[in-house]
Length: 228
Image 1 (cartoon, rainbow, N blue to C red):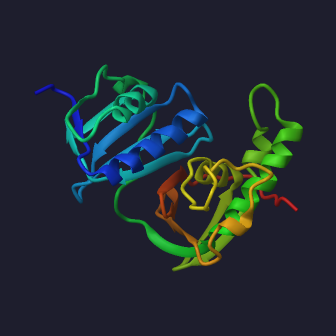
Image 2 (tube, helix red, strand yellow; image 1 turned 135 degrees about the vertical axis):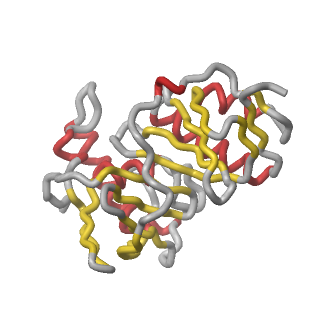
């Protein structure tokens, strides 16, 4: 047996991981993915989205060792050709991972936000970004705008645009007939009006949980502006 291996036996779970990796590579061709065994036995796949936001999707899988970082594009290519057998994870890129992961426990539920609202914000934010972006991408002033504020359980959380972009860009909000890219042409009617995104937080982290995955960001001071 290879020292670094991954087994995703269930076809549905492989599709989940493939979708996650596809979106990660779309956002950053050089992305690395960190695979880590969770306390509940599932394997969490983590990527840095490029928005200073981490994205996570958990799958039923077997992982050796319990924490490994590899090139997302390489894993995507390897996993695409497998039918559930053992996959050699290849070259270790543990040193390429920067920063800590959020804790698994300690988050409190603050409130729920309609998924349509978040996708609409991403759509309108993309329109603004297309007008003002440079070779470095969207301006930081746009990414740091606080576009939603929610309160509950004694907490008040302000959600910046970069978190919304990451959530929608990773395809975590289901909308029929679309691949998850936040484009101005996105038909909001494809999103179930009852679909929600759950907002959670702990002392140092903000987390948004959608049907197909979660995004997390450290809680820091941001610019309070709204897209009209």
